[in-house]
Image 1 (cartoon, rainbow, N blue to C red):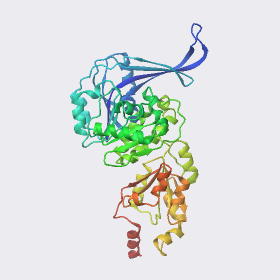
Image 2: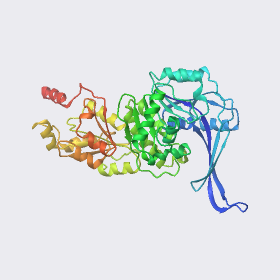
Image 3: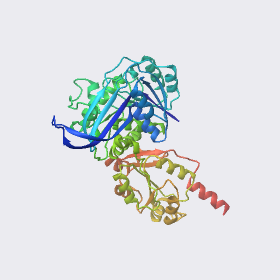
Image 4: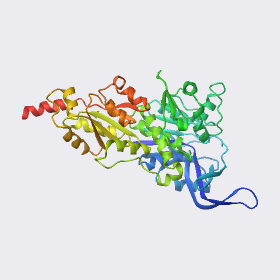
Length: 472
């Protein structure tokens, strides 16, 4: 299914080197350049990230006719680009770093040009989208009225993730979620709504959350949600995580971020918007998509951010089938990955089990099954169960490619098991109401979330056992 990214494209240039001396005519470092990397920024970076993850991506944008645009075209090779003419020079942002530390950044042609026209091909590409990311970088494309009319119509049937800009156009009504950082949100909400804040730029604003209370951020987010008539607003706060405000009277959802050492926050907002779009496309609810996106943005920064994009690591994948569950959970967490857990008796594994397990595994970077012991099954299911002992049940589960580890527990419920694992997601079948599960409050106590995957009612262990008894 197709993801369409629409918005402004920039050329980002990273100049890296070593600084071992000062300039003789001024007290400034001399950087001996070792590498120069040119890459697509803005909406181009979002598209590049999604394409790098293997998704079918179309980029809808406008481009200039200059040397910088030629570099952009090379940086976007392999991505379907549907572009009109920008009528203005390509904006270029050049960062100079010494041994990974920023020294200076200088911007070229970054003043906002007139609103560019759109072509029929650009609008047609939007109509084919299954999910849309709007990456507004204040260059005027999102202010085009034809484009806005089409986006407003699509918002009724297609999830739209809108990443706004202080100088950009307001989101069209009905988008699934708008994702300002805290500085942007306060600026866009206007004077008198929450503290003024002291962050001067978009990246710095991401770190402003340490001075913000969740009540204050919630007021700002709700103000913007009502003004924009969006379904949700998700304010990102750097190391403090994010706050998600819904449209249907739902309480604001604080989303903690994993502790991450960040040397360069550039691109975190783009990674978050891209991840949100992917998880909404996969059919996840917005709260689950938001939790996953925050963790993936943190992982992106932990692995070097845009500086490492050329060799960007794929999500953590664990291949050892007999890995100890506790070591696995710890290792995945330390690598910035998402630990998913599910549980049950799994007595006579059937197609309903495998479908649910595969769906659960797709939500994160490892899947740990909390398995009722034989004694636990007898207490829960009766004296004639289990049909297979716990060793056989564990072996069958570990033989499935989407199960990474099994942890057997003796209690009637998995709460003690979960308290030890501390998974990011606890997954149950769709026949459960997660709000009524006794373990929900426990999982949410460390910032985890409970969710469901589709339930297949025609497939059950009891039905399979009854059928076998008739042919035995």
